[in-house]
Image (cartoon, rainbow, N blue to C red; front, side, top):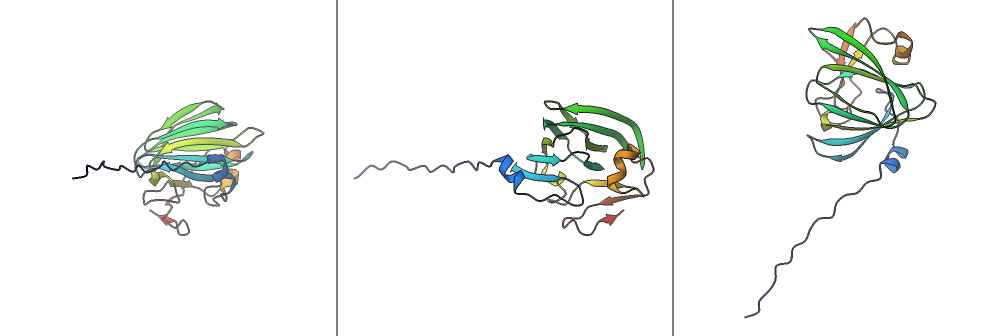
Length: 176
């Protein structure tokens, strides 16, 4: 009788280059940014986000789980507020720069504006559902009568006229 050894085959890791993926991606017209899913699963995903000079990631919030941000390159202003009972409360404005990290909790409205002269790059860890392109629990965008390009001049969305939930295909926002 011949004795055989068990052959174990391991799957290789999928390795991606964040800079290459970012260079080859298109800017998301709704969110006014480039956002690229790098790796992970539904519960824990890794993204890279890019904003050019004076671009703003519109104010939005998520109903569940935290997001963790790390400023890879550039400088920004982040405005946060708590969203409770349909109202914005406790607004804060803070500056962040290369090397800074912070967490965003559920129902924390957050808006990030590139205030530097260079491209702002952010690494983010969040559930896949926090990406407006993927999942069913996408970000809830805060909308007012101003266009998203004017958020920087009005400092933050002071009067909310609508709250829209971006649907999975991103073409037909649902007002709720």
